[in-house]
Amino acid sequence: MKTLKIFTMGLLLTGFGLALVSMTPQRQKMPEPWEVPAKYKNMENPVEANDASIKKGASMYKRFCASCHGREGLGDGPKARVLKTFPGDFSGDQYQDQTDGEHFYKTKFGRGEMPAYKRIADEDIWNIVNYMRTFKAE
Image 1: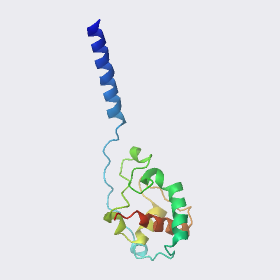
Image 2: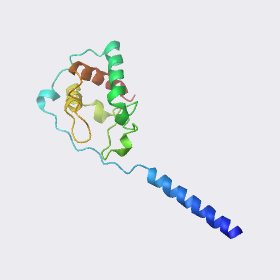
Image 3: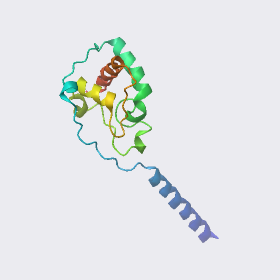
Image 4: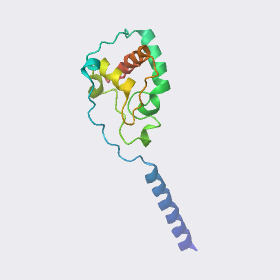
């Protein structure tokens, strides 16, 4: 009887361990370099990064972006785990060193798993860009 209990407990622990491993997201690949046309790369952000813009951008970001990119732009949103490509970390230099125009282009036109947000007004995309600049790591 004692052997049966030990055997059963071992099976349960093994099953639990396998379940945990299967829930762990697979290693995501890093995105390929993203070529942005010069027209957009050199585009100036026409929206001042003031409190009103950042507040509007935060609202739009939460609605359209946070599910993949995470609440704080770390690429850890709830949908991120099912993506094949890491959504990116907006707090780091790799993101922050890009121009506002590059971010506008990527948001507007998308590619691969990143959807195109052509239905969002350009001014709102610029607001999102302004908000995403607040993620910069200190």
